[in-house]
Image 1: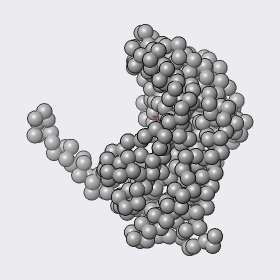
Image 2: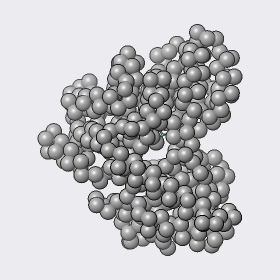
Image 3: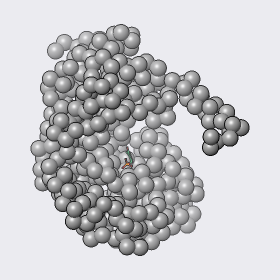
Image 4: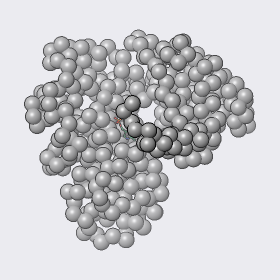
Length: 409
Ligand SMILES: *Cc1c(COP(=O)(O)O)cnc(C)c1O
């Protein structure tokens, strides 16, 4: 018994609170198997399931080019990095990864972190400390990692209504022009699947003397001719001061990064505790990431395959009356609007239909907007789309989730 009895009620109360709200999280015990993506084995049901909520958006996690590179690096350079970047952990392959990322985003330099979360937290908290008197403007839908980074910067913070340029301008205008400012926002918003107004926000930034910090986590690998994200697709990479991304989603591996000017990156490298005081990425991961990025810089097959299945799924769901939000991206949110039924729908899909879609509840999304967030990949088949559509219809009818009027096919 390690925890004294006296402390247990605190944890019990905390857990009871989220259980009462129907948002206690149960992790699904899965095993993905190479060659079978997006099918995985569920240890909860003892059966195979189709994953419809993965962030390995393009299936790069099983791509032979990535696996070969990782295997080679593993046997060539060993398991772990063996140190921080400063103390013996600065492997050549990590330097190469940073050069590849700088090239991908057409920036002077890039810096790799152990995850996208750490990249955001460390970069934003450090940037805020490096700019005396800085005020940070943050989109209301920004990811938790940015919110925590901004909080830890100690800077004055103003949250602007999601994607609301007028609100942002009112907040910017209220500050002295010479005061350091930073605007933090995303390109593809992960839960609603809508896109940030990059061009307009950068224009405001120029007008009011602000740095721009763009999270492209849900876009890198998937948008732009080389997978450089929405900023590449729209020809805006130049305008954005800092581009942040992950190696863990479309690139199928793990790690995070920022790309920017050589000076800004050098300052983060020198000051960010979340970069300095931690063991660097295992070389094999870096090798896998380089292989994945390089492959997706040249190949459009995966991106086109994904877009095709996304379009098909949106069409089929809406024809069947499923309350799907029509986004301009690969993210397909289906609204349930109630945490208990959202979880029930997810459980039924898993148990009765072999479909795994995680219920997304508060605090990941606002209360009342609980949803199933569906993320098709190029490896999902038309038959899988049909099966998902039919299963959702049965489950929603059973749970009396509000459906939309049937649209003729
Ligand atoms: C997932 C996510 C991150 C964190 O990236 P990880 O590599 O998973 O740590 C950052 N920003 C957004 C918007 C995300 O959805």
